[in-house]
Picture 1 (cartoon, rainbow, N blue to C red):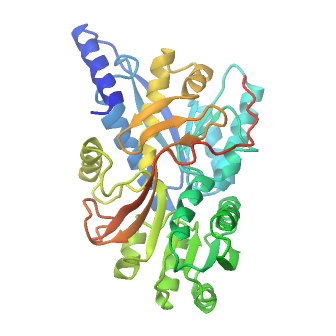
Picture 2: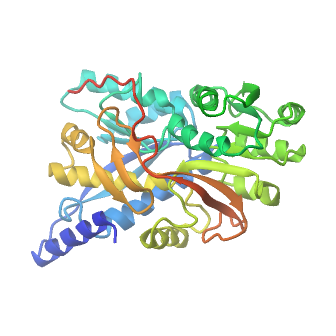
Picture 3: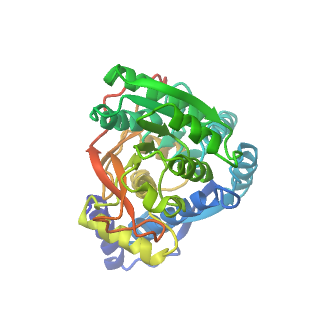
Length: 415
């Protein structure tokens, strides 16, 4: 059994045998992500994963502050807008919430981390902490790093390192086309792809490298024609949401039957949209894995998720680590209101995750280090399907503690 779950159970038993009978304090976490509009499925899925991990790994055992407190996820719809996110951040803070969770869009994350840092400079005795579950622009833990921001997903560079290992090992890939959304994350993916390919396979020719407006392209056919016409042997894209569906369908519809390497090419309607066309073609790089489950505990945990949320998918395993790691930090501090002490407790934390294995929150830049996998879409040997499509993503390459020795330009200033 997971070491943290054992600790939770032990504390719960202690509280019960002591006959404790106290009202539970609600420790509220503001979830600021899209819950409406074209990217709503991403936010809805993320909120469900949070609520499931809170229920199964924190609240049910009654271990948070020895059963005296429990987490409550409070959703705020940011409509994937940085401006709206800042409004929702202020609403959350006005409600007394001091723990913020967000991840859909690095553009939003950049705006939030700046706003949180600014608030904390002006209000040193009333700080806010930002838990980033999936915004992976490397700058957030490099030049733009700050003490109050913690990233629980592998950043774009770490994922590209694993992805390009897979490409480098394939001698049939001699030409690569890079395409992505025109914002900080899309640019980071493109830059990382060029850098790692040059290091690992300098013989590979990059035959295309372009960005398109995020969430605004209605027809990706012109892009698909350029990709096919380039003679590319593989495509690399960081697209997500509707842009991933549109690009993938157009490229495969144009007759492209070679690897399409993605960061977010599954779940949220994407797997169902690709269907049989994506089998053996669509690749996904991400933290952790679902097929096969990393541990028996993971199989039970993910299975319970699908029982509770049958219309959603467990598409971002690393998100299940946020709540229990936060709970461990709060328990170490002894209360849920000393945000600065909680942040210090998160620094350097080692966590034995049921979904990502050994997981470390690196203290130098607050970038988590964990298992990263390269997965392939298939209808075969899947325990958990995506989008009720009869197919899922199966781990093909597993990199434990991926990029643990990677450098950072972060110069952390601590309060």
